[in-house]
Image 1 (spheres, one colour):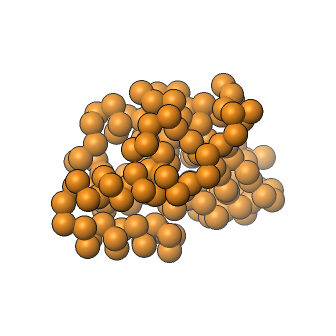
Image 2 (cartoon, helix red, strand yellow):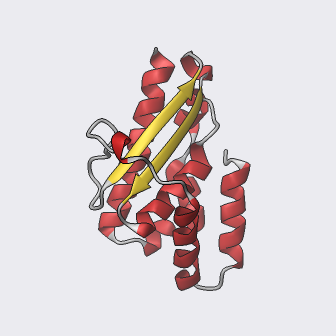
Length: 142
């Protein structure tokens, strides 16, 4: 259940020959994101479990499982900003119910990220996915 934006990333990854190019593409995705304002980089938006500084700022429109999930994110590490951009493509615009149904591990495996990220980066990526899922679950239950 991937969004068109995520499918576009997956398609681009298929055309890139090596991991050096794929890393550059992920970094470019991160550079294209608008940075978060310092005022919202607070403990409530910080993602624990990441080696880098990571913030996820949700914006959820509506109520219950049908509420639409949006978020913005930022990091002090360029590759992590790119990973946030990948997650944004995977989740942004879905209902909170759909967010909870996304097989993030399976979708991200299509990109081969698990095989090419350090264990610290993989743990951080899992922490970001868990934060997104917990934000969506809290709203779905409300």
